[in-house]
Amino acid sequence: MASSASSPVRLLYDVRVRAVLYQVVAVALVVGVGLYLFGNVSRKLAEQNIATGFDYLSRPAGFVISQSFILYDSGDTYARALLVGIFNTIWVSIFAVTVSTLLGLIVGIARLSRNPLLAFLALIYVEALRNVPLLLYLFLWYALIVAVFPPVREAWQPLPEVFLSNGGLIVPSLRWSSAHTGVLVAVIVGIALAFFAASRLRRRRVASGQNQKAWPLILAALLGPPLLAMLLLQPDFVVNWPEKGRFRITGGVQVTPEFTALLVGLGLSASAGIAEIVRAGILSVGRGQWEAARAVGLHDRQTMRLVVLPQALRVIVPPLTSSYLSTFKNSSLAIAIGYPDLVMVSNTTMNQTGQAIEGIAIFMLVYLSMSITISLFMNWYNARVALVER
Image (tube, rainbow, N blue to C red; front, side):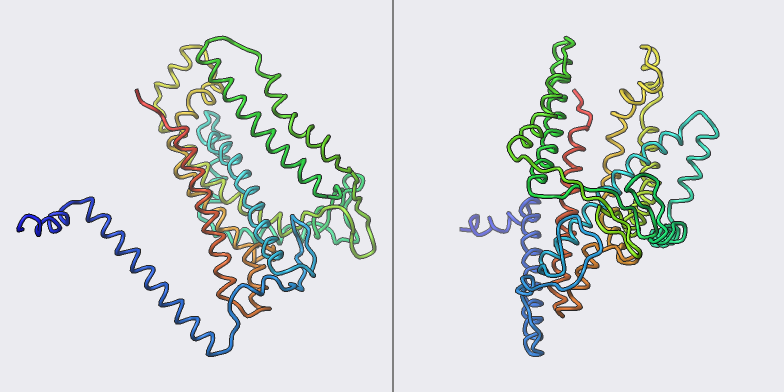
């Protein structure tokens, strides 16, 4: 009896049992506090006759969004308007991450150049952009775009049917339809298949030691899905040409100054930090790797691409994840220059409906979901590029 009574007590001395117990207690406390707050807020809102719930998402929004990557007009629902804000946030974040990664890689390598002028210019670039408030750069780039370019009625025309003014860049566009969306998805699938085929063929070549022609299979994987989609969907390629009026330009697709200022601000600001991450990663690779690569006849470019950077990735990827997350979350500063991202659209929705809790919950959920997605993808990639010791 004594041994059976003391067995639960002995379990408490097990580190694994205590760890699970602590987590269960913590989750129970969080859930309990959450339920209490939810009940308290619901009761107070009901006492003040304030509507709750997400039924308002099906009502017409009644406001215009200046830039949208999907079809939208003021008669669409609040749910559609929020979807526009989500897409605007995601797209500008993707473009900013791409720009910052490319610039950061180039500047980071330039910081280690044996050319003193190039290394000095890269140092000036990094020091000028790092640790400066992003909001200041957003205001700077937006003011420059508005001040440098002419008004719409005096728009520059660098190419036929291409207009450039302080209202943005307007170029011809396709009249988009669901068939074009299907072709675009097929293009993305083709690119993914081409990368997969190239990776498999590279591993097979390394394993067998035989040099095989890879380009026919890669080309077939790249072009096959888009061509098949075009044959099945048969999209109409009708060009929507811009037309210059007295006060505005209609038609075409517009890249607004708000989008450009946000993209440039986010991209340049993040690129300085990424440049230092790349420099630190390269310096973490021992000098012996450089010397061994030169000993087998590789020049500096091949050494960097084939020997140094693959080993530096194990140091680069973890802080790069943090930089990508910061870029995505910093896109919420778009509201300061009038870019219609998720936060701005949510604020407009909350002002019109008075349902602030639901609006804040939506963009909290979106930012949390995207942050988790970025973290999971970068962790997966980090595991792929990690050095495996024998």
